[in-house]
Image (cartoon, rainbow, N blue to C red):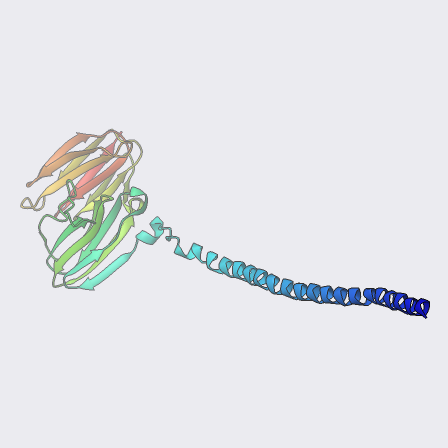
Amino acid sequence: MRRRACFVVVLFLLLIAMGLPACSSETTTTVATEESTTSSSGTDITAPTTTTTEAQTTTTIPGTTTTETSPPTTVLSDFYRSYSGTGPEIVNIGSVPDNEWFLLHLSIDAEAKVEVFNDSGEKVYFPGNSFSLRWLEAPYDGRVLAEPELAKVQINTKGTWTLETQPVSAAIELDTPATVEGMSDEVIRLVGNPSSLSVSGNYEDASTWFSVTYFQTSNNRRNIIVNEPEEYVGVAVVAGDGLLAVGARSKWSIASKQ
């Protein structure tokens, strides 16, 4: 009887021992579930990565607009233009690119006072030219040589006017030898390497002022050849090609010689 009882106990213990793998399998199942959960959370982590990529793509769009903020390039062809009006006006012609000299051509049908200023509001003087020195007699049609600093033209008149900014190449060309004549302010381009000039002016109206200023092309040096309030006849030495700024209210004549 005791042996039987012992056998039963041993068998029972063996059965319990045999049941342990089942518990181990449940543990494995639990681990698998945790791995699945971990896999799910891993997907959530990659989502922000995708969002970050989209944000980077979006930031490249404003980058394409940087070229629009670049200042426009101004060229000489944009500077040369015509202005017109009636009555008093201040014409803002702006700054000439490349620090170039240029011409101002004014036509007006009534008495006027014309003055010129730089961008800071300071008066600019044209050496040897009477464009801005007094009330202009009507009608008036003349040109003056403008320095690069000129930016504003102040016109006081009751009449109708036209103002043009022109390149120096638009000046009257005086070859050598040759002669040019005029009746008002004018700008002349000397070519052909002249060595002297014969100048006459105010011989029809000696009550007006007559001036001629020579600008040497090679170094931009200026020389006042004539500056007289009466009739003038004379000669002047020049150093080759250059520009002449003539200030006059009556007939004048200039001849170039080699």
